[in-house]
Image (cartoon, rainbow over all chains, first blue to last red; front, side, top):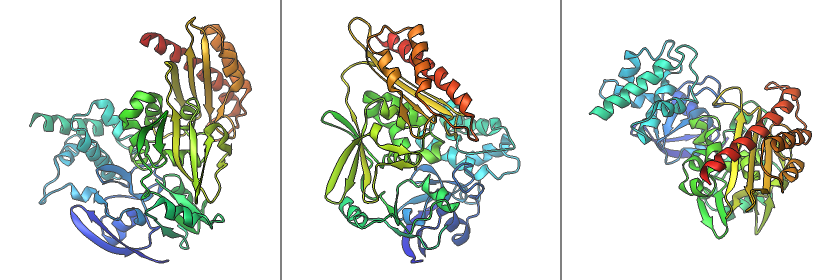
Length: 158
Length: 290
């Protein structure tokens, strides 16, 4: 397979690499960049475990090809924490017990992060809609919704 | 993923169409990839080459003359958020919101939804009731096909290997119409329709139905219009009895199959229920506005 060279940004860092254009963004993140936060579960865009933020929008990284990421700005769950401190959204996930096994958490966080980028004061319905593409089989979703809501409320107050 | 698949992303439509001009089926057009990539990964699709149309600037939504022109590359999110569509075709925005979940809507496109030709394509019924047309571009040529003539079977359309669906055109309507779309799925999000229905009708000065459209999905080899049911509405005063009779006619015009989502019998029953409910809801919403 003929590789192509692509330039893109991941968590603020410029990346330049050569790869098979039909490889998925998820496989590049995990296997080339050693960012293991985004997970592959269904590999078909149904579960949301691989969600990252690409150009300010939540996307399934298992459904984005290397050929489609040239020039893109990508944020993964690893990009949320700064200087060793969790992002406030992550703190609220911990406080509200918004995960149990944790497998869906990176995707949940990134779907929520994408929502809050575009809509800092979401309604509960908008929060629920924002994570409609993410499956969680442990929590029943309510704690996740509460965590996102708590973060939005705190941000609104400050 | 098939290791032999090569990839090309031309930056002009002309260049893309030139490449496709020699295509015998080995090159597959890709946009959002939300349907094609899973099919490639499971081995159901094995294209030798992918031609990515995302760099062709096919994603604008604009008013042009008597048409709303939607670029085939417009994502479901772009449709949901379009101010222009909120004025001229609000039902399309509502339907786009019912598709999958945000990550899929951020990538999947209206053109892909139509070209994949799933009998359950959510955007087909709202476009059918608005008499939409699709623009099929090929090297140095272009043809416009009414959407109602576009689908030929499950996964099949009139599009050739040399063509790209570049635009969807919806005639701007000057009349106030009653419209409604109902999607029945197994849950509220991330679900393929079990049955969905879209209706649209206008009333004359005497309150009788002047023109009408009924489109149904997931109940035939293609998204379909219930033409006999439409005819039965025209010239009549809207009301429960009429809607019941018309919905019974609609269920005679479909040929659902049983699959892992529902049985044929259930779907047939739901065509009656959803058509009736769509007509009633469209009429009661219309009365609130008028």
